[in-house]
Amino acid sequence: MLELLGFTLGQFEEFILIAMRTTSMISVMVIFSNSSMAPKLRIFLGFALALMCVSVIPQPDLLPVTFMMLIPLAIKEVLTGLALGYIGNILFEALKFSGFLSARLMGLSMMTIVDPSSQEQNNVLSQLLVFFAIFLLFVSDGHLFFFKAIIDSFYVLPLFKLGFHNNIVLEMTKLVQNIFIIGIKISAPILVILYMIRIVLGIMAKLNPDMNVFFVSLPLSILVGLYVMTLTWPYFAYIFGKVFQTFQSDYYTIMKLLALLSPL
Image (tube, rainbow, N blue to C red; front, side, top):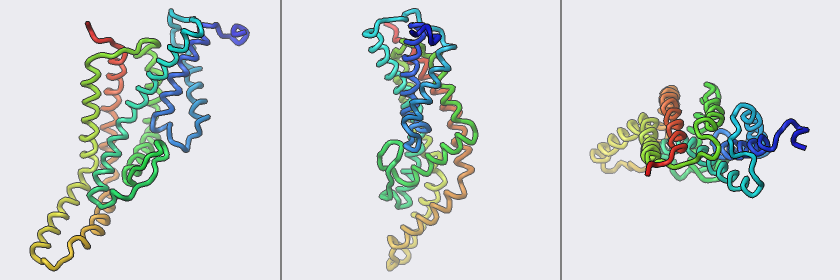
């Protein structure tokens, strides 16, 4: 029956395995996992990518296999897709951390909303930075990198080749460190201005003890913080562009390490 559709059994099994990886990656990546994109659309997009890949990716020698052997192979590809997808979200975790730092100094840390992509509560500034970053990616065609990474993963990390190299721990540690570094870089203008305001208010409180500093500091921090944020959007776009370029090379480095096994 498969021959009538133009598929051999090996090609059909390869398509299923590729679809498991592409669909799982798309399901967890921030730019695709937003609740505004219907699950059916994500599944369709994953299968469409798999259909394009199956004609260009060489068929592994292991295929075809029996149905019972196909199940653990499919689970392994799902785990590979989830791992690559979550690693692709590290950059956006840095943006959330930046928004958390800014909101905390501005007095907006208690002002939270539900993140539609993860159904978790995040502060407003974190969500604003994430949405603006996604907007920049689509405007600058940066979202095409994630499509390219999905397709390239089958060449860098072929089917059945998921491994674990010791150096991947160091690389992941580097990415986690970058979350804090990037977050501080992006929020630096707001942090500097707000800390200066705190210092000035502290001096004024010493000079005039009758002054209600807490009554003045909260609205002043919010107004100044929002005003500085509106002035620094070009700075944010510049820093995010530089960070995204570095992130692309780091992403492929981790992908290559996943294809290696640690030496005995």
